[in-house]
Length: 451
Ligand code: PHE
Ligand code: NA
Image (cartoon, rainbow, N blue to C red):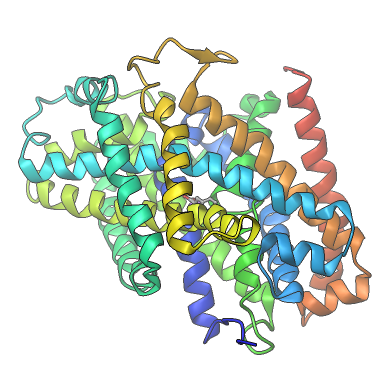
């Protein structure tokens, strides 16, 4: 029997997890959600969710994989044979499939922006005109689908050939580069006229915004989305842990969570200093970074085009690596469940993801702009359905499974806490706090209780 693959070093494992975590969730999604929910109030609730729900759930997901030593579905059923917990694995396949369908569309927008800077068309837009530029692009009947197809082609190509090395590069070289670039841009943002206003929007809470229950669901949803939780990805990564790389899981998970959070906050500083400088609407939604950032790049005295190309390139890479980890869930599932070869699975799954993504690509003012589900355009609907409902449900299953489905000795042994106080706190969080909070918020939203 062939030995199962394992991470070579703890650092390699951390980088891979950070590679999956850092993506459009930090750069595109976090600022626009924070902007919609009032900035600092959202940030506050988000940080609480990250540390009392997200981090404990990540440790739990790693534990399932570490104990099961298999893929997501396999690890669930091996650590609890013939129990319904495996639903968590199945749900993960469905959720990741739905997410990647629109994630590839957004990655296509990023790619198109980079391309537009390369050809010189975007830097020529008059100040204040980027909104129209963006609207014209996403509202087109053909272009968004074309760029979605290009991105899906790249994803399928990489999955088809299984180029592990290429994906790993993105975590080792491009992510640090992205961090440095964001630091430079944040430094630049602080020199802008709107810096003070932007910073107070981001860091001084408006307490009245906390009365809105949907803010909490959005915060939990974003916490799961940004940390790649609730769909078995971190279970799968935990499945490659050995005795050595798998010890001290809590510390490992904490570094991953801190890095992801830093990226999000840094991007938010860049965006909101810019938003208030150019007088844009912080709550405009998914279009936020596509409208605000280019205005700033275009107004930079020197190097704007260079920064823009570099920025969209790095974000493209970050999005691509996350999209690949998302699509790989369905590909490996199809290979095992339907016994397809990797090549067939990549082509078929990639084709299906593309088909489901097309309505998203056409939903932002394009031909399907007026086709609303639950009052939302298709892309926004799939986004809310997955991040606000499916991911929290997936995370709920994970914490209940590890917290209640295992003997507490096995649970604590697997997670490998060195500090007894932290260990007890964690157990308490995954047994009571996380499940109860997730449940209350899900129910409040399902039954439409509004403040
Ligand atoms: N965490 C990624 C991001 O923030 C998105 C993602 C979710 C990737 C789930 C993989 C799995 O963009
Ligand atoms: Na993220």
